[in-house]
Amino acid sequence: MPASKYRNVDLLTVLRERLRANPGRNLPPHSYKRAAVLVPVFVRDDVPHLLLTKRTEAVEHHKGQISFPGGGEEPGDEDLLATALRETYEELGLEPAGVEVWGRLDEIETVVSGFAITPYVGFIPQLGALRPNPNEIDEVVAVALPVFLDPSRVRAERVMHDGRPRELLYYDCGSNVVWGATARIIHGMVQLLAAERPESSRDLAGR
Image 1 (cartoon, rainbow, N blue to C red):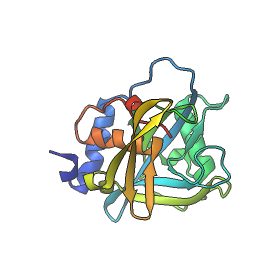
Image 2 (tube, rainbow, N blue to C red; image 1 turned 135 degrees about the horizontal axis):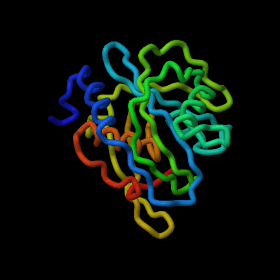
Image 3 (cartoon, rainbow, N blue to C red; image 1 turned 120 degrees about the horizontal axis):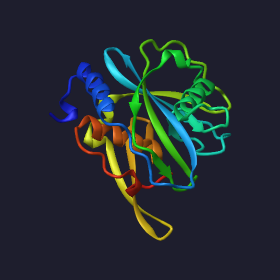
Image 4 (cartoon, helix red, strand yellow; image 1 turned 30 degrees about the horizontal axis):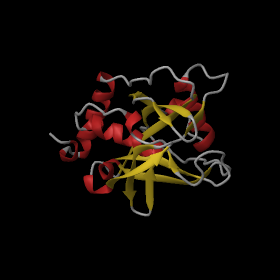
């Protein structure tokens, strides 16, 4: 059954089961800076949503873009999951204890900014009041998961980078456009829900 045909209640069950059965793949050995993001999933009005952020113009990387909470690995982090949870707390005030980590998606690289990002999917049973860091977060953006399962919402553009053609993905979400690394992470989740083997993220352009 195509992912777009699942009922809302099924989406969470399928996502959790697929993540457990499909541990994310790592990139081949690389020299990129290591980073991690949390892909927060929560339910609003009986519909699964993804929690994203719009970055301020003051941050160092990806100014003004829609992204998942996360950032670069720091020496005190036990592992990359700790990185994702720490960064999420720093950016949104979301306590790590309030996140049920279901699994991870494929590691991807950002060609322009030089990061290798590990995405962790976490379910938020009770999403309380958030405390966005005004230095990093301009707006908190919630998008219903079924939006990303609608083929009419995604488009691809061919671009050239370092003399090589690449494909850049865009998801149209009302007044917001999700693209770059965040779109590639969502694309991997959509393919997982659709029971398709995710194609190599390395064939898609980083932001």
